[in-house]
Amino acid sequence: MSKSFDEFVRQNPQMQREFELFDRIGNESPRGMAILAAAELDRSLGALLKSFLVPGEARKNLFTVGSA
Image 1 (tube, rainbow, N blue to C red):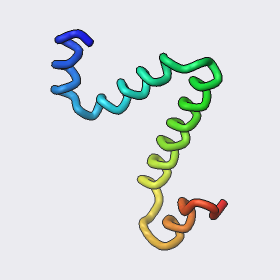
Image 2: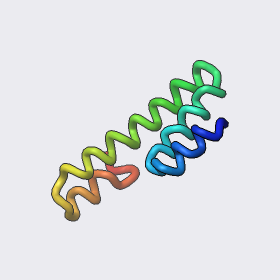
Image 3: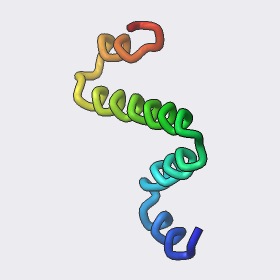
């Protein structure tokens, strides 16, 4: 990676995960790209939903593995 890119990541640590994801996706087969993108979308949507729901037992149960 370039020096300016490394500097940008140091100044914006929240972007590190996204850059790592894009790097991994770029090294995958088309099928692997789709699987990684879908997994990241699932994680992102879960986090978004959790942020809007009222904390409590119902929210916890909704996101527990095997509750669907």
